[in-house]
Structure formats: C-alpha cells, structure tokens
Amino acid sequence: MTRVYNFSAGPAVLPLPVLERVREELTDWHGCGMSVMELSHRGRQFTAIAESAEASLRELLAIPGGYRVLFLQGGATTQFAAAPMNLTAPGDRVDYVVTGSWTKKAIAEARRYCDAVAAADSAGSGYTTIPSIAEWDTDPAAKYLYYTANETIGGVEFQEVPESGEVPLVCDMSSTILSRPLDVSRFGLIFAGAQKNIGPAGLTLVIVREDLLGRARPETPSMLDYAPLADKGSMLNTPPTFAWYVAGLVFDWIAGEGGLAAMGERNRRKKDKLYSFIDASGFYANPVDPTCRSWMNVPFTLADPQLDARFLAEAGEAGLQTLKGHRSVGGMRASIYNAMPEEGVDALIGFMADFEQRNG
Ligand SMILES: *Cc1c(COP(=O)(O)O)cnc(C)c1O
Picture 1: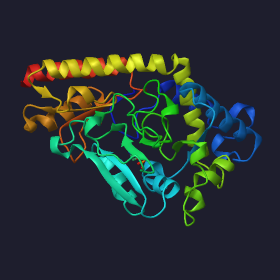
Picture 2 (picture 1 turned 180 degrees about the horizontal axis):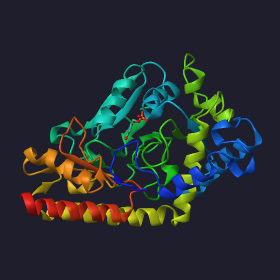
Picture 3 (picture 1 turned 120 degrees about the vertical axis):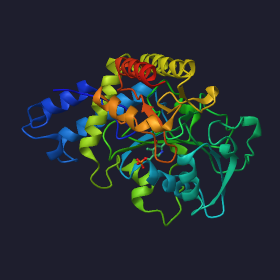
C-alpha cells in the first residue's frame, strides 16, 4: 500500500491510524456483528458511539457547561442560513468582518434574512489582510458579530479571537477548529464542516451557547432550529452516523497525540517552516500579510506561472498531491491540517527546493 501526502483543502487527509481502525472495525463493530453503517442510530451501540464522540470533543476543546454540541448535516454552508434564522428577526442588524470568499458567501446568505452589514472588509488588499479591529464599524446593538476564523481559499487566519463585548460572536471554524487550543467561552456559536479537520464530509459540527437556543424565527425548518436539534440530541432524523463515528475516532486520535496543545505546537512548526522557506526563496511567494497567515492553508505562487503545470505534475509523481490552488486565486495551495504529518511538510519543502534549483 502506498499513501501519498494529500494537501487537499477538503475533503482532506485523515489520520492513518483512524483509517486503519475503521478498516479493522468496518464489518463487525466491537463484536456486534454489524458495521457502524448498519447500526440503528437509536440503538444502544450507536448511542454509545455518539455520546463518546461528544464527550471526547468536550474534553479536547474544554467546552464549558452551558454549551450544546450538535452533530448535523448540510455542511458549513447550511449554517450560513441557520445562524441568521436562529439568531435574528427580519430587519435585525448583524455585523460581518469580511476577509475572503467564505465570509462573502456567508454574508450574502444572511442578507436573505436580515440586515447583514460588512462592518469591515479587506477587499482593498485583495483579502490578504485582516482589517484592524479599531477600524471595524460594528453596532453594539447587532444581534451577532460574525467572522471566518480561517479563510481556506485565501489563506488568511485570525490569530486571536476578536473582542465582541456583549454581542454574541458567531464563527465559521471549518478549516481551523481543533488546530490548537480554543477558548470556547468567547463564542455564542461556532460551526464547522467536518471534512477539513474533523472527519469525513457529510457531518457538520455546531457548538452553541444555551441562552441562544429557542429564538429561531417561526418559519425556521426544525432541521435548522438549534433548540429542537439540541433537545433531541441531534436526532430529529437519522444523523450521519458513520461520519459521526469517524469524527469520534479522530477526536481520540488527537487526544492520543497530546491534545490540542501538542497539536498546536506541531501545527506551528509545520506552518513556520513552510512560510520561512517560501519567504527565503526568490522563486516562491505567499501574498498574505505575515500577521494573518493561515496555519492550515498555505497558498503560494511560482515566479513563472508557466511552470505551474510542470510543478503539479512532478509533485504528483513525487507523492505530493492536490497542491493546485483554488480556481479563484490560481497558483498552489498546501493544506496542512492536523492529519498532515510534519514529514509531509518536510517532503514538500524538499521538493520545492529541488524544483526551484532545476527551474529557477
Ligand atoms: C469548506 C468551507 C466551507 C464550506 O463547507 P461545506 O461543508 O462544504 O458547506 C465554509 N467555510 C469554510 C471556512 C470552509 O473552509
């Protein structure tokens, strides 16, 4: 068996020990004679799997009491609508800090429901910066303040949780959750599609503060209304059982690796060495302001875009795959999520140095 280093932005690499465990248990989970995929979501076995996954996540993130954890479907994109439907009435103001493609999508969706205002927007820098908080034109009466912790396409990441006063903070953490420790108590609502740092596609994680439940506008579909979802343990209908199970294995893998502090140290080393290499080279470049570079998604360009195709082909042959940048920005993008080992980043840097030597 050969495993490549997969730098995909999502669905992304999963930890090999998790995949091996899934394979081991695939046809017969813990001696029950059935696959997890075949278990009733209301049965004793799956209930244990579901509860254990939530407990592991609560432990990893040190989620305080007073927060509900939901395991849903629909992807992060569905949460772009669920957030305003749950937290606003028509006409209410909400503030968005627009730092790239994903926030643009989120604010466009929110505008279908309420008065969503771009309190700050880094379009002027081509989304390579995060506007300084002193310049945000936020409303203290807004129903929430929204931001995207890590812009997966542009490679721009908040290094700190912004202060929002009494206004609930809503955050799309799809591509950075679990990359390092996080103070959940700062947030009203966190959501994340699983397919970057959590597990397989098809699962969406929501962490919501209890006092924000029960405020959804009346026409909100029950499947998007956090209160009944929380009340029924994310099982208003059949949940994505297999993805939930794999996510639980990923949480336990992270704990076994030393938890989020250890994961954060490893991720810091990975991104530091990649950015240092890029900055020291006259051949590769990363456009993002050094104060807000992503820990998880590292876009870079080659001095001569004519070489892009050759770079990708040769990288692929060297076992370094899915490095093509998003179609909206071009160039390359190396996604180095939790499950990308440090050796994968070393291999990428080695290849990049060699390619530069031969083509620079
Ligand atoms: C991938 C991604 C999304 C979209 O997630 P889906 O689960 O496909 O809806 C939204 N926001 C961010 C930051 C992402 O990285």
